[in-house]
Amino acid sequence: MIETGLSGRVVIVTGAAAGIGKATATAFAKEGGLVALWDVNEKAGTSTADALTARGFNVVFQKVNVADSKEVDAAVADVVNRWGKVDVIVNNAGIVRDSQLVKWKDGQVVKQMSDAEWDAVIGVNLKGVFNCSRAVIPHMIQAGKGVILSASSVVGLYGNFGQTNYVATKAGVIGMTKTWSRELGRYGIRVNAVAPGFVSTEILAAMPEKVLDGMKARTPLKRLGDPADIANAYLWLASDAATYVSGTVLSVDGGLVVGT
Image (tube, rainbow, N blue to C red; front, side, top):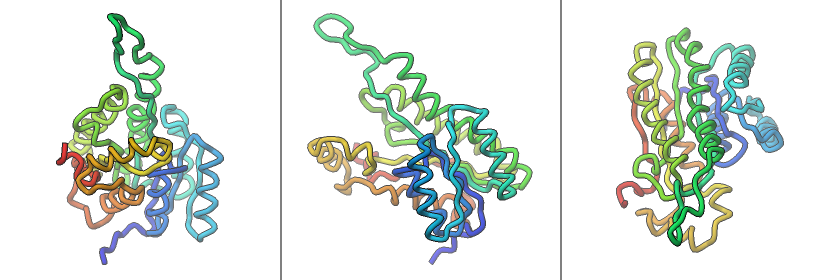
């Protein structure tokens, strides 16, 4: 059995109220981490934190909009005041606002991706990663160590129809990951990204069965991922088993990228 070395580590997980974020927060808590769960959904976030606390885990919920740098800075300060440090951040929070860039029909434009659709996704998925990472890095530099993990996606590697905004953010996360690994390695800080494939979350649960079957058919392993599959990848990347891994993008997709 691999010793993760995560007991007593202070971990922030964004978008932790449900789905992959919830599974990730739970995984770190089980390893003995001190986990701050961040989300804009106060009801779901509080419920998740309460359930983990009832199981004896050391967690706290903070309502944080990652697109707001002032909220992020204040929340990081609260974590440091509570636990004295930040060892790991998992930039998991993300939203979708799907639309074709320009939808053309019968010789005319019938719809375009709006400024609001673009700005909302960029704000959470890209600026949010920037805000959160920037806020924790000084604390990690002072400690001489730290781990920054961020959610990319397989679509950030090969694109996806109707997701200009989302794909741009996930490709941007890859670029920031590689840049920060170069900038921060001298301080003992490792920076990596995870690129999930089709994962069975609340968003996918609302999709028609025919669409889900198509996703499974495109995946070489012929199944959807489970949130725990992604959580385990974050757990390994943060652990002492991966101390020489930095600047990488780990695809956790059932072989999807290979199969495209």
